[in-house]
Amino acid sequence: MTEANASTSGSPVEGASTASCNFCGSDQIVSSEFGIVCTNCSMVLEENVIVNSTEFTKNANGTSSINGQFVGEYCTTPFSHWGGPGQRFTSGGTKDQTILKGKQRLHSLATQLNLDPHFVEAAHRLFILAVQRNFTQGRKIANVLAACLYIVCRREKAPRLLIDFSEVLQTNVFVLGSVYLKFRRLLNIQVPVMEPTHYIDRFAAKLELEGKEAEVSNTARLLAKRMSKDWLSTGRRPAGICGAALLIASRWHGFNRTEEQVIEIMRICTSTLKNRL
Image (cartoon, rainbow, N blue to C red; front, side, top):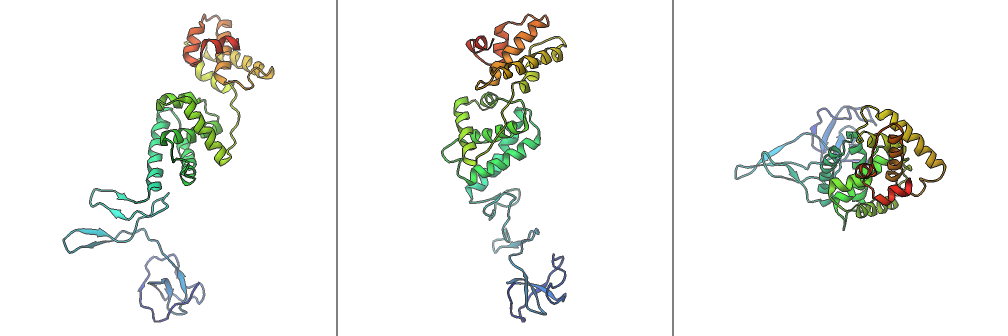
């Protein structure tokens, strides 16, 4: 705290967070150029006070202008320009605009992937770190957003593959994977290894198993676990393991599913499925 001139002029503070002086106990508190000042002991109680009220000043030409600056939730610089009635605040900070627009695009991406809102909140926090570390420079914002959301999916063990993001964004899956790996290395983010069993229920529902999806899924899950114990899934993508397990399980339960049907659903090549079988 610093001392101010006792004769400092100011107006009484209405609804101030400090009802009385912390030093002398006086309630003679005014708002001045120093902040909130106690006129009894001349102590500055608060500085750079931010208020949530909005005040306007009428200019000579009849138009109105806003007083002060608006500080957003994720802003690194305040919003300092108001375009008039019906307009939004704008800011000269490019990073602030990128962060705000990023959340809107995350909502759109999560909706297309059928993800809950809490995925968006977690991914947006990662995206803020990416912007602050200048990770978005020289990269497509959509790819960075997808990498953030995919990391959250891995943490929450949501059955989403990187190729799902690639199809929604219409981008190369290897480019997207490169952005994801570089972002993980930048922030030293650890994600759990996704077991193939997490994806079996999702893909079994697309095989049209006439109400026996649960039985086929359970059998496929046992096969996938057996493959994991035999180190067959180590170093391999889960789609191939899921495809082989589902094909064997569906035929075990009397459903004549062809390799072509499984390949189309799993989005893998013929050689991958045959190697897993």
